[in-house]
Image 1 (cartoon, rainbow, N blue to C red):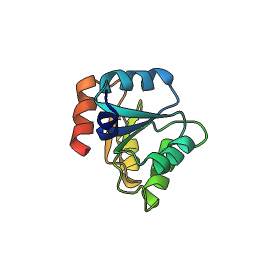
Image 2: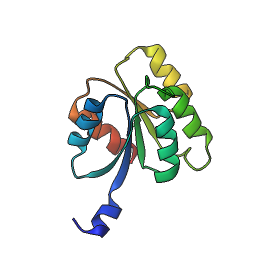
Image 3: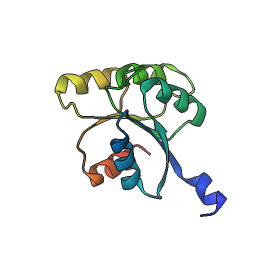
Image 4: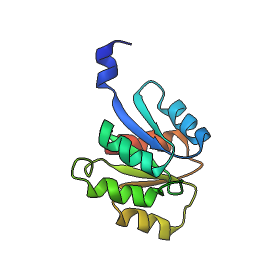
Length: 126
């Protein structure tokens, strides 16, 4: 792949403390996206500011900083507040979906996810 092709790829930040989820997301996204990995919410906030991804996929329950808190911080920062955040979590309760939306999340995918669902959701936002 040429350097120009690498630079033109859309960036997806995946924040999850489960390496198997990050691996699964990377497999689904294949060579179509540049994937940035974060293993906790604190790292997600820092990487979002440094890399300015096109979209963030974030688990709700992570160490150091949960996904809801990280989402709120990313949305409160002027340099990152326009980045769409999709919660990618194992908790499918409506209360959690409402909480995620209230902190600025644009979407919500429940694990286990279907590959096409992930691709469709990403393409809806970027």
